[in-house]
Image (cartoon, rainbow, N blue to C red; front, top):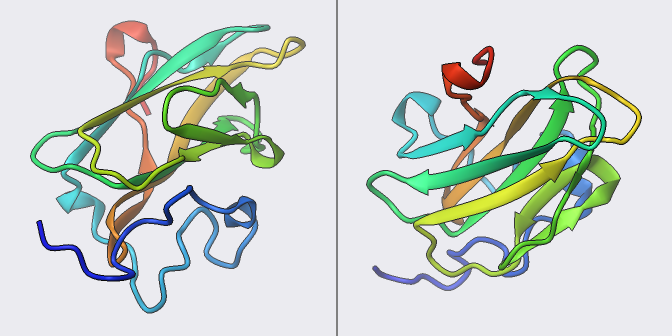
Length: 156
């Protein structure tokens, strides 16, 4: 793989303002724009989408044919669309609690990344996980929504 200076994902993850920029949840990578989701070479799968107080849900990004360098995932309540819950710190990740998000902590090639989200202790409902996967600085997919195996509940 050819490395181009400035061609990688942000080395220590997305900044917190990613949640509130004009292109929400999308990286500010110069003139680069999101790729078509129809060409997404990654799977994003959540172990569920229904939560009760303190429920934990696992979310995994897996490269089917390709490695990825970065990611930004956010948990949102399916009814209100508000940011909800918290993410556990797992290897090579960092959470952005201001907007219920998790991002990469390094820009090395990844074949898979797994995260654990925890619901608030005082709520219940349905959640969805959305965000961006970065192959390299100029190639990324935004608006990705995690799928949920049908046996685990309603699929988004």
